Length: 550
Ligand code: C2O
Image (cartoon, rainbow, N blue to C red; front, side, top):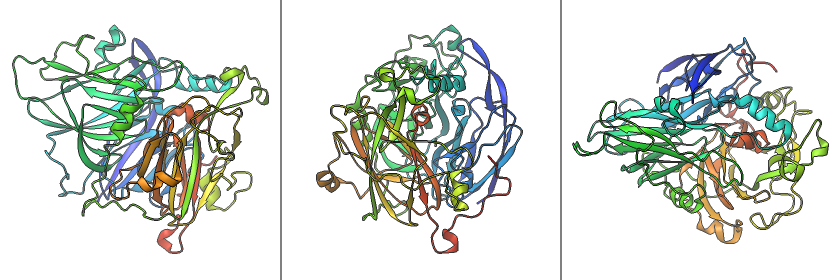
């Protein structure tokens, strides 16, 4: 194991997309940001210098951060933001994970341009458990481009109480491609391939607010990994990737054939059930067999599911199984110490209770989002981890996050009258090493919708899922406790539920939130407070001396 060192200079840099030139926050002047490469077992040190006129923090999405919570990065959860002119060094080890993860800013909506891939290679000499061995590996970050300033977009939405403006393009490694306008055609991501060779695409959905379908015309895709865990390989023509999720996928280029086209379309389109506005453009990149192949917007598209094809999404998700092999066992908790039921969804706030509100949410209210009807309020005076370390909770957090919704209702049926949410910085304490099950149930209070939930500090096993209301008597018996997939982000299905299990072996404070940034901004989050264990190596170490102050 080695120590890998990177320096992130956060600066404003000029970027042009869709004919719009503007200054955006970047890392080292690059958009998307630099690729980090480590091996399993390495220590990673990233020295961050904040040279923009805004706060910033960085999150290493999916890295477990075993006893290194001070490096996890979500602002006001594990650290105060790095202020303009300040620096902070993230310092942690990569333990028991291999595959693709990514890094992104974790303050407001800054991750719109501050993101990049984090590749974890297996230890030297350890082969991939799948075949064929890829001839080349290609990180592919799917994202969203806003012509406006994303910070202004979310600030405006929070002020008016309505939904934010949608982005102007989906992007491949920052490039929108020919389906938007003439300028965008020059900004097309081109993946050059050699006939017969196999490519491993390390795909990351870094989009702010959209789950995405992904397909390549005339090519099938073999999924071999997800969220830095191997999976039993399966073939699919179309992938569904939620914000936060990653997928390692093999693509084999066809044998040389002079009569084949010189390029094929790589396509991305949104999966959504949101009634109202969303960017429904299909974005295109090129899989190129010959250099400089002509690209027109008429490059034949691969067939993609309809934008709201929830059935397709459920069938695709059912393919994921962990290897559960001797070398990569699935340590699924068979029994559970703590069982929770979280109702997850959108709600509202009465307009009158807020200052300067012209409320543009449903029926003149403000949008809010909640778990168990609690809309998460970010602390401001300190980080939750700091408060926990010092055991100074008063005025910062309350340890009363409800273990179940206050009033059980028909989550997926007719909306109840009361759509209003409570607000608070409520956490849920867990004893060290507790085995935990959480059933995440979508609510249809403001319309059923899929929510990609991300848990910091843990990988969890996805032991069950279904449509309708979760039924403890029948659904629990159908759990997969043999080879469930291990992930850090899972979508609560539209008008359905998903059950996850994990062992609380990582002391600290860990946020769990919807990875649609608009929902996070509306409060779709909660935090676990995992207590220290009795042994010295089961305790959270003290904060590094250079940790930013609030
Ligand atoms: Cu990738 Cu808290 O997020």
